[in-house]
Image 1 (tube, rainbow over the protein chains, first blue to last red):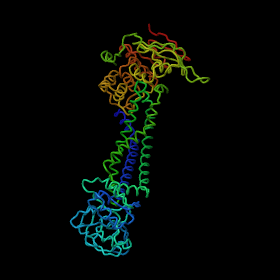
Image 2 (cartoon, each protein chain N blue to C red):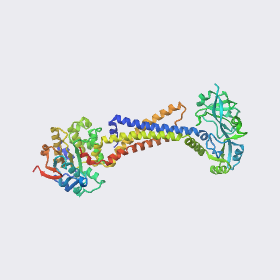
Image 3 (tube, one colour):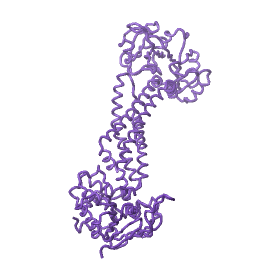
Length: 377
Length: 246
């Protein structure tokens, strides 16, 4: 069956090449588009995912992680006093104006972290490549990401600038931390972050991060916090999903990427379907002969499906490396294509299903093929 | 040509000379219904015996193809009986027919119907495997059958590299796959020159007489009658059989 299938495919190499090209483009589109989507979503929730907090607590009316309605320290103390809370930390997320050395201002997303000497914070800059992130506790200290150097126009530890009129000094740099809003992320201490936002009051904060005490159940502590007025607590996983879902649905990015991926599947479907069908028509008398001589429908259908699976396998074998190449090219443009092993497996299954469905017309043709037709001239 | 030993290897399951292999009794076949109905076969009766070559002649549209299609279990008759393996199989369902055809019939066509992408050996091998997915040593069997039809040296050639006669020999070897007792040829010599046509008929004749197989051939060519034990004349759906050799 496999021998016949691959020989029939290879007999017309041009047609076979077109089929493989169609599947490859389809595979590449699916991988790159879905990978880009997951890359964007990873970016959108990267700060949440990088934290070690069991719970993220914010105002109940918050829709977006980045545009959180400010709370004040009273909320922090209420949360900290909930039974089962081992530790609570404040985080202020807001936007501020970063003075670019060659003139002008740039909007940046400031992440103010609570840094306490002798204690590892539940959220801190990660992927630190130069400098010392522990120096964040110094007033005015900031950490920036090296991918934002072209925008910020500063690129080394020790560089100075101003953020919302407050002097800032780079104490460390990171790699691969970007925001979904495209505004560069600037980490700083909570006190420094508050100094950028005098209009928000004396002690603003966006979120309270909670470390649940050992022995306490996270869902029970979460319920207790949710019982507090105007506050909502989410596990890290829930918070991450909420943020991904917000950006995916509000910006249409999810629909956009998946529409392109589906178009890729349709392209592959049409190309493979057309190639398989024309191949089936070409050999219809030979298939009829086999049926006349007693070959069961399942055997002949098996040959068609084997051709579909060979097309799927080879198309994937070509398309997947193309997608990996595209990932490398896009990385240069600061775009993350998240290609996980699971995505490759799912794409392979989708490709196989696509080719199998594309073979349906051919399968119907051979199933309906009357073996007596081989006697007709 | 084939030797006695080779022929012994191709002996079908039912090989006793003159043994009745298939019988059609009062078979009629009508295409369509009502005013557009066309009666292709009318009350046709035919016996197929081991070791015999039966030629089926008749003008175009006379019902020859319908006759061998019904005999080969490719068409269901409108009425009448088709006896095979000791039972009337005329009304069997589609599930049983492929197995019956695989066990009892090999087909040879005017246009060869060989897969152009496969070598002679592969064309025969794939037919054996398609008939019986559990066939053991299909490749060896295909090689042996190609030896039987005197194509041993060209087993690795594609159909495009074979002459018409050689292609028809591959088709005959393919038809012999699974060792069926009845070979049905639909104008198997029509696309061949006279010399090649006669050699193909000679091969079919030898497969019948020496290997106890029944060979049924539809033809327009009266020169082939000398290879036949019986000639069946079909006209307007009516069958008239006569014996040509004592």
